[in-house]
Image (cartoon, rainbow, N blue to C red; front, top):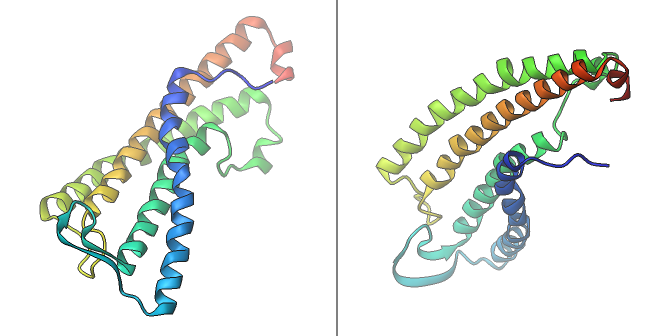
Length: 191
């Protein structure tokens, strides 16, 4: 039986679950880009004026830009979801020989003293990175998408969610340790 997820976990994982659906347009854009390149098409659709993010047309470069935008969003926000599903990379060969309480203490240490500081650094510098891209109106010079600031802004947002997840996970682990200490050592082996 899977434990009930807290509201915090649900909210932190929601962007990853929603953005995971970008895999479908990602695959379709790859197929369309391959077909367009094979046919020698550069511009797929052109229109008068400028549309935010798309610019004045849909080109093969727009598709390529969309591909890295979509992949980045899937990885960044999917990483938070992966963290909570416990599907991330761990050092299981060491953890397999540890008692559950020891694993819990190592998890708390890793969450608060390894993952959280990394998240703080990425949020701090990533925000500056995104702000510069916004201020300069950074976009593709090759007829691609015109809002690189948008995808660069996803970096600090996703790491903020991951950092919040690290704190939440550490708190939940500490509560679990406290409960097992109160209920007795026999429950410690059942975990």
